[in-house]
Amino acid sequence: MVNSLTIVILAAGKGSRMKSPKAKVLHEICGREMLYYSIKAARAMSDDVIVVVAHQKDSVISAMERYFTGLTFVTQDTDNFPGTGGAMMDVQPKYQNVLVLNGDMPLITPKSIEQFLHSDADIVMSVITLDNPSGYGRVVIEKGHVERIVEERDADNREKTIQTVNAGVYAFKHNVLKTYLPLLRNTNAQAEYYLTDVIALARRDGLVIAPLYVEEVEFKGVNSKYDLAQSEMIMMDRLRRTWMDAGVIMQLPETIYLEEGVIFEGECIIENGVRLCGESLISNSHIKAHSVIEDSSVKNSDVGPLAHLRPLSVLEDTHVGNFVEVKKSTLTGVKAGHLSYLGDATIGEGSNIGAGTITCNYDGVKKYQTLIGKNVFVGSDTQLVAPLEIADNVMIAAGTTVTAGKYESGILILSRTPIRKVEGFFSKFFGKGK
Ligand code: UD1
Ligand code: MG
Image (cartoon, rainbow, N blue to C red; front, side, top):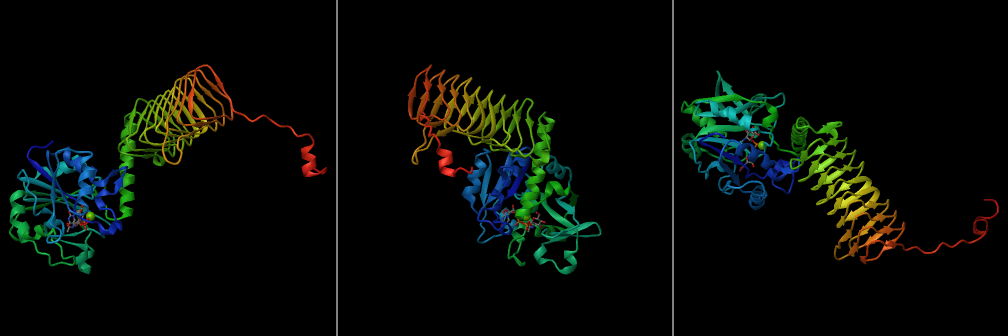
C-alpha cells in the first residue's frame, strides 16, 4: 500500500472491437471479469480507487461490488464527453498523485504499478516497443522527449510505422490534469476527447514527461476476443504457477483449466485436461484426467477420470469414478465408481453406489431430495425416485426402482419382474441355421 495515491481505472467504454453485446470490461478471464484484476492490483496499492463507468454501468458496478467494498464509481458523460479524456473529467482524486489505468489491462500487477511512483516528472507514461504496434497509440519521441501520442486512427503512414506505443498507464500530478483536461478537444477521427492529448499540451508548456519502458506482458490491452484468449492463457499460467509453488502437483499443466476463485489445500494431484471452475476448494485430493469441477468442495477424495461435479457438490473421503455426475449433493465416505447421476442427494459414510445408479430428482416441475444413510449398498442400475429417505444399513438389489418414500433400516429393497424362460424361442425366431 502506497500512501497518498489515487488510482483511476477507466471502464466506461463499450469496446466495439469485442463485437459483443456485453461491455468489454465484463468479459471474463479465468472466471472473473477482466476489470476485477485491474481493481485487485490497484487495491493492493491504494485505498482511493476510482472506477469510471458508463456503458452498462449497473452491471459493471454490481459485478465489482461482489468482490470489493469501498470503491468509488464515477459516471462519465459519454454523450457530451466520449473518450478516455472525457472519462477523467468528473473524477475527483483524493490525493495529488493520480495513476490512471485502462480497465482493459487485466495482466497488470502491483509491482508494475509501483514503478510509476519513483519519478518526480509531471507525467510518467508507460511505453512499450512492439514489432507489431497496430491497435495502439503511437508515441512520438523527438530528441529524447515525448512530444505527443497519435492514435492509430489519426496516424499518417509515417507515424503508423512507429513501434513505440502508449501502454495506457500514466502517473499525473492532479494539478496537471486540472490544467489540461479542460483544454482537450475532440477534433480527431473518433470525435472523442483523448486523455493522450494531455501529453502534447503539457509538452508545449515545457512540463517534464518521463517515458517508462514497461514489459508488454503486464500491459497488454484487451481489445478483441483474440486478445482476451491470449491474456487468459497468460493469467492461467500465472495461476497454475502460484499453486504449483504452493505444493499442487499438475500433470501437463498447460492442459489444465483453472479459475481465479479455486483454492487448493495440502497436497493435491491434478491430472491433464482437468477443468476447475468457480469457487471450488480442492483439499488433499486427486482429480483424474478430464474431470470438470464447478463451485464444489472436494476433501480427501479422488475424482474421475471423466467425472463431473456440478455446483454445490461436497465430497469428503469419497471416491467418484468415471462418468459420474454429481450435482448439489453431499457425499461423505462414499464410493460411486461408475456411470451415475447423483443430484440433490445426501449420502452417508460407508455407502456404495453401484454403476448406473440414477437419482430421479426432477418431476418436470420441481426438484426433490434423496437422503441415503450410512452403509447403504445401492446395487447397479438402480433408480432412486425422489423425494426419498433411506435409513442406514439397507441393501438395494440391482435393477431396482426405489419409489418415493421412506425406507427403514436393515431391509432389502428389491423390485424385479420375475424372469420368464421361453423354451426353444431362439431357433424358432432365427431359424435352424443360427
Ligand atoms: C488507448 C489509448 C492508446 C493506447 C491504448 C493502450 C486513448 C485515446 N488511447 O486506446 O493510446 O495505446 O489505450 O491499451 O486513450 N474508456 C472509457 N471511456 C471512454 C472510452 C474508453 O472509460 O469513453 C475506457 C475503456 O473502457 C477502456 C479504456 O478506457 O478500459 C481504454 O479504451 P479503449 O477504447 O480500449 O482505448 P484504446 O483504443 O485501446
Ligand atoms: Mg484498449
